[in-house]
Image 1 (tube, one colour):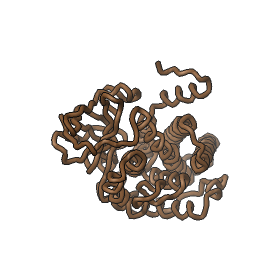
Image 2 (cartoon, rainbow, N blue to C red):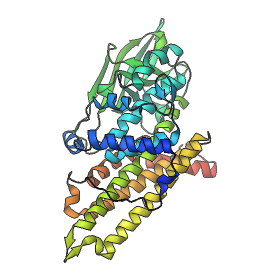
Image 3 (spheres, rainbow, N blue to C red):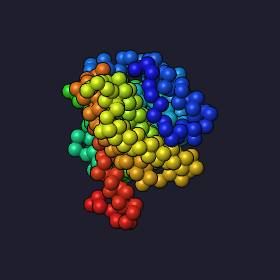
Image 4 (cartoon, one colour):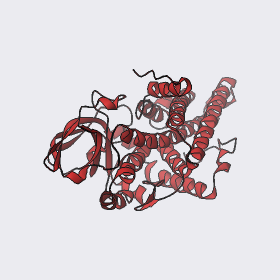
Length: 388
């Protein structure tokens, strides 16, 4: 669609700074020009071209909320706005960027040695090298502390064995940040793709996040030098802090998917005629549009508030859980409702709601299921953990 309706009735974007609006317009134009015309075909084919990663790097979007080593050093809200505009195109596009920035670049930036930072980060920020994040395992998703991947010392070297599952960018990654158990606790390791015993296999037959590379990582006695370990953290707090960074991009990103669905529904309702008039003239259709818009406004305001909290240095993991749980569920409900406005046309890839709805089913689950975030919020309210 070349002309989209203005659905920002509350003028929420007026709260953005001039720099943040410039980022919004730049990313939106990039997505419209380079990705939007092709995304239905990529979704149907189950792929996302690796060549897009350097394009994101040229725009300064990879690790953009971090400083130094080629990262742009922009604010949290600017990063959130970029994620929103990428996911308005497709969740797979936003996932590629946020995995690179928040799950691959961030742990090296936060916990790596100076040598590791200088070796990897500039090229990763530029998109010349692609990274992935190896935490989830076939039998351990919500409980990462129970992971079976193990790293043992053998002289000065480390030897890693195990399997990681549902890894975004896995088979196209030049470097994998892999989390493994050691005798001293969970540690992060930098595993180059050429390491002997390391293989990545794509996962096919997905019905969600099809425009995204999803892989299984297999580590069969992968031998790494002593300086492959991230020296700055030990324990599950390492990978969990990375997930907190990535979840920030998610609860911003899904507002873009929801907005795309609302725009599509409004446009269709104004042009599709039944019983001699546009379906947008019927009260039941307007009710759907009004509730979708109201829910979207609430999600946008929540994302903006949490973004300003992050910039002020006060954002907590429990608050991130509120954002992730609330905004993903809201976006999924909007996508499903928008699909009903479009009727039979809504189940085709000619329009975005069914693609966004399928994608959001996965977003609801990954990087903390809805149930896990519910319990995290419950623990913050009561002081009682319901996990065990």
